[in-house]
Structure formats: structure tokens, C-alpha cells
Length: 412
Image (cartoon, rainbow, N blue to C red; front, side, top):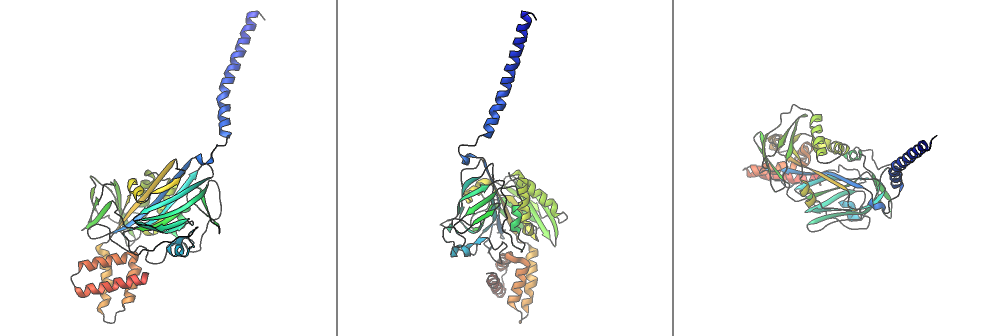
């Protein structure tokens, strides 16, 4: 081999080695970084998603009316803590007291907080409820109390356990509570001196007296819907079920107002469920979370009646339910659905027919009251109150007041 050929081979060899070294360096560096443990585990990525419902009943003027949303038997498993257990100290990790209220304008139903993390971490969680009281929760909390005008619930520090699995509490009796577990969220663990509790979320519920963004007024066969404040709602779903037949319409509020016909009940429940899941995922929920929310409320969202669904503006949610998380999550999604129940002429006519039995002097008022409650549940009292306002007959007004009193006593 000549000297020039040898030099050429050497140079080519050097170039190949240099290219190999340069190409290999980033891969080696990346692998090293991936294998390193973080200096501070709390800096891991944390994502928190929340959904829940604000339920109200529209009065004759379209504005929400007071009602007794805690009336009747609990729809929650017995392991869930409530105001009664809080007063005895059983529901609190470090003592404390809550105060039960009877009537309210808004029922805050089943907000749940889901946690997603890339590693196990400790998170402190506290929720304030402006002009409200938190009435039920699970797992147990460090403290819960009603201030003026703010209710507070504080779990203290809970552990987020991605990838962990364990048995969760369940009872033989069916409950819509369990549907909320069907997501990919991490387990959370709450510890006290007595025990450790695990769940797929943090759950709470309450009663409030605050303004929701929409007023809903039934005018003949049309609904007049308008924004009552500065927080704008873009889209709503008007749903109605009559004797098991369902229908819905999707409405867009232009300049904060909408007049929309009552739905024709010729559609399917599956269709409106898909619309709700789509609406919820557009607001940032994962699809499984949106499906879990619809499944949780399937038994009441789609029961007989006329109602309006919409997503509460995020600014109003944050103002009404200030949420404190430490460390702050990389992503926080909060989707509270407004649900406004509308009292229809058909409801009043049904109660009117039941009340006709009172024309008989020997009529059993408690028995008739229970028939009304079985038919209309927690909405019976608001319907009866509407009837009291409409009638000019003093005898009939007094009789209706007696029925309201009996209904309240039967449900307490």
C-alpha cells in the first residue's frame, strides 16, 4: 500500500470514529437523565381533574327557588361521612363540627377530584364553599366546618398512589356513587390514627345559596333562557322525559339569551348521553371521566321531567369553590355542570289529581302526602309552593300548606 493510500485509510477511519462518537453522545446523555431520580419527588407532574353538578329548581319567574335538597333517604353508601357523623367526631380526623341546613337554593352534587401523577406524592387539599355548607364527604377529612359565609373542608395531606391497587369499600346495596371510580385516576390514601382509607377520588357534596348564571322560565311550550350575570354560558342542552319517552335540543345563547321549544320526545337516551360526554370532554375532562359522570347521574338526569344542562363558567366555579392544592398541579380542570329543573304544568296537574282525593271529608292527608312524595320526590315541595302562589282560594291555600308541612315532616 502506498503512503498516500495509507493516509487516506487512516483519515477515513478517524472520520467514522468521530461520527460514531458524536451520534452516540446524545443517546447516552438521554439514557442517563432518564435513569436519574429527581432531587425532589414533589416536583413530579401532577394533574387534577374535577367534575360535579349544581342543581337548582326554577320558579315561576325563572329564578331558582329554595327547596330541601337533603330530604329523603341518603343515596350514598353508609361509609360516606355526613353532618351527623361530623357532629359526633366520627367523620373528622382531628375533631370539629358542621351545621346542618334544611333549605337552600343550590344543591352541589357529587364533586369528585381525580389525581394523576408520574410518581407517588403527597398533596394537601382544601376546598372553600362560598355561601355554602359542605354536607357529605369521603374519605375522612382533617376538618370541616361552616364559617360565615364560607363552608370549608380540609383533607390535610393525602397520598397519591399511581399504579397502586387495593380493595375499595363497597356495599351490597346499589349506589350511583361507585360509577365515579371507573377512570384511570390514581388511588388516593388518607391516614388517621384509627385507619387508612383508599379511594379513586376525593368526594364532597353540599348546599349553597348563591346565584347561578342561567335563569330558565317556561312560557307555554317554550323556554326562555338568559344569563343572569356577567359569567356567560355558550351552550345548553334542554332535555325532557315524559313517561319514559325522551327528547332534547341543543341551544346556543346569543348575547346571553335563548328562546327554545320544549323537545319533541322522539329521541333516545343514548343520543343525549353522547352529546353530554362530548360537551364534557370539550371542557377538558378525559373521556372516561365524562362517561363516569354521566353514568353516575343516569338515574336522575334522565328521569321524568324537564331540565336544562350547561357547563358552569370556570371563573364562577373558582369563585364559588376556591380550591387549594399543594403542590400546585401542572394541569387543573374543573367542570361543574349546571342543572336547572323546570316545574311543568304536567307536574302540577298530576299533583292536582292526587289532591282531588282531599275533597272526601274522610281523606287521609298523610297517605295522600306520601303518594305525592313517591311520585315527585324532592321536587314535591317546590311544586306545592308554586301552587300556593297561584291559587286565590284561601281554603285551598291552607290545605296546600298543610300538605307541604306534612311532606316536610315525612322526609325529615
